[in-house]
Image 1 (spheres, helix red, strand yellow):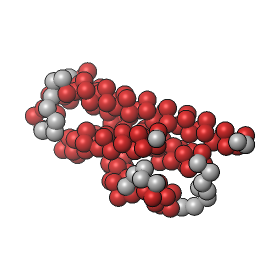
Image 2 (cartoon, rainbow, N blue to C red):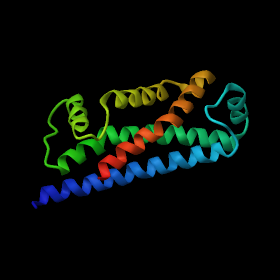
Image 3 (cartoon, helix red, strand yellow):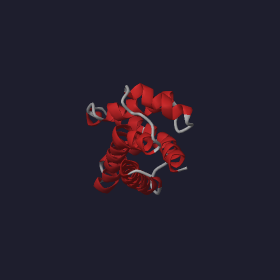
Image 4 (tube, one colour):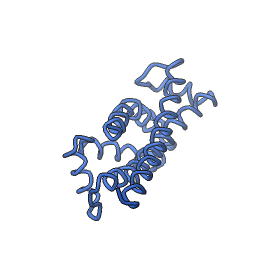
Length: 155
């Protein structure tokens, strides 16, 4: 095995580790919220969360970690995985996603749905409580999809 192959494998392991940390902290935040609230969240529960700083911090952590996880996977993990497998990544991102779909790592349409959630986060979710509730509920439902992608990459 050449030195570049080892470097690619080490980068993949580092990016996988970073992704797993984000997922773990996202899950921890959701678990903390589940101790007091029932998902999917509704407006009265969310108003209660907003008025209790500790619970709001868990929401913020879940949103932040989801965003960081989605960014890490899309910007670093997928490419480093393909490089570690000896694949070419000098192509458009959609082609990379299609390649990962062929390898049964992810579903391209589901990935774009996850990306849409991440993009919605960056567009001022704090300005509209209904948008924030929707985002938190979507994150709650979609974290298993992210977990499944990471498990597929680990195999």
